[in-house]
Image 1 (cartoon, helix red, strand yellow):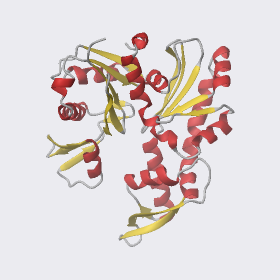
Image 2 (cartoon, helix red, strand yellow):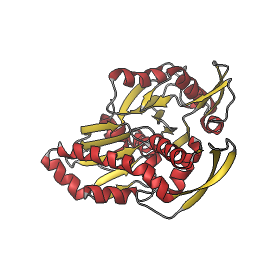
Image 3 (cartoon, one colour):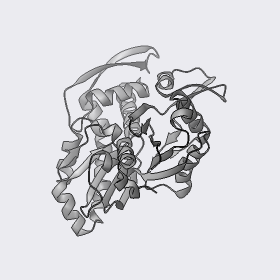
Length: 330
């Protein structure tokens, strides 16, 4: 391994960078604000604060969608900006790079991640690809190099990736187009339909974080938005029962897709999964009592990750720091 090694998780919602011997050195929103179509105005958390509030001449967007780079130009500008902020020429030049990518995307889409780093002026020594389910498992301190089968479910911002791992590889995998952003959209639609009231994505995110649950609850939260009847700004209470009703079908869809994958799993691996359970991670996996819901639906023990948003980048760190895991990268 090179004296310098960098791991990058280009998540839909946030971007994380790991450096050998230093740990996670960046964790910010994967958002960019472009002024007059070609000038970088802000990136990361600063750009996220402008989301849904910017004037017409400032475009605020997420360059990564559904696990792939949707806007390569904006993603290049964003990563170049972060590298400059982190004193990249001194710390990153000539380094080896380890990039996490979803399994069920095309080779062209995977190549876009590779090109993103190779097009920087940091002259990378080498670029490695690590599949996200493998990084997830390593980030949760799971030994996936042996013969034991492991089921990992990563509920991200745009997608849920369900993977079965064994012998350091992926036996089966399925990318489900349901994630945190879809949860937010469902909350917005439910409140608009039932209450004639419009809220923004950030408010929906707060509702999801604070009172969402896989089971009905009596929590309540006041939110601000626009009353569709009067057209004026207003405030209304929203209950945990309403949020549950908005999300339960999406939770059920994820469970149904997991069942489909399990039906196609070899019996010996099924035995391992029954003994050890499901490993749940990803930023949206922290929704209240979601683990209990999975347990009731699947009849399997659910193991929750302590830091679900960071499991991928910590898995890249494990590959970087442990030479024995180097073979798990491509």
